[in-house]
Image 1 (spheres, rainbow, N blue to C red):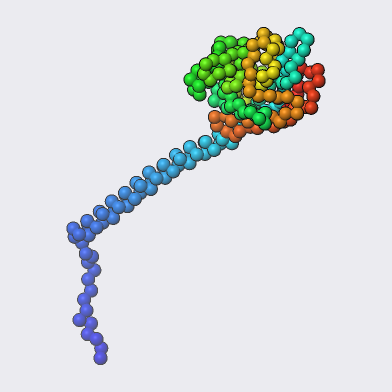
Image 2 (cartoon, rainbow, N blue to C red):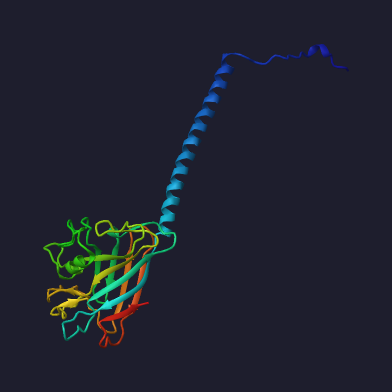
Length: 259
């Protein structure tokens, strides 16, 4: 039996009306909101990625390098101390390093028995005051003298809590006692007091007249001592130097200890 084609009808008109319009508008709004959320999220992620990348680069690139360490013995006109009284740590920056603020540097030194955590003499954040008698207008030698002989009620003897610095090379003249910022190419000497309690009667340390007023550092760098120095900057990798002092200092006033 042949179907009757007259029973079927064909319509070429689509459904239009307010309902369809509402659905269309709702879909557009949802797409717009989703796009807005994606754009905002991608912007936030981009900012976080840039910030993280900058911090990671700074952590990797900010590196102090210990070039050498010398030990100096206290002396009088005729005798020298049996222990080392002062460490002169020559420090530079790695190639491509970001600037390093020594005012925020922490130096941890141990003689295998006692440990001192030292901050720069101009840092007043940790103990509420600068190193006793420290002045940004002083030359490095004057501040070194105060490091060796100065003391205050809090925290105590300068030698146990502070270090001072003298610049060796500073091409852009950006380094000062009050603003110790190191840039690539700069070279400085960091002074660390290691005066032993048995060496308080000597009158001179590295050309600085102490008149037997040097203060005990709570450290003892005698012959055959194992010494460790760790430098922790505000940002960047820590720098560490370990060495064992010679079996005898002989008649030398200055002894090369590292490398």
